[in-house]
Length: 108
Image 1 (cartoon, helix red, strand yellow):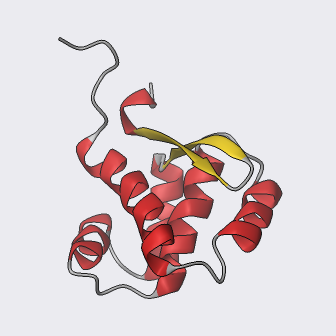
Image 2 (cartoon, rainbow, N blue to C red):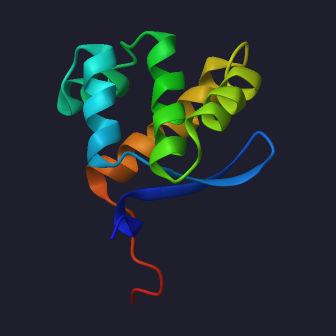
């Protein structure tokens, strides 16, 4: 059911699923004080606090099925003190999957 909004990518120690499910999106909105659309367009304009990127990744991991403690550990290890362009790339793909959906596998 969430395949259309799931982004799969290598992060830290292996490939992981990142999904901003409805509950994770609501948590992101609560943490940032922004609606999903406002946050998406802030990212387009490169007008976001760096912490938002890590929260998108962490919540995406949780929505993808990872335990919250493990998601926090991975983000603390692999998304802190990294080049922002690197962290932005992954966060953008996660948000974009939620906003636009992913192309269906095997579509002609």
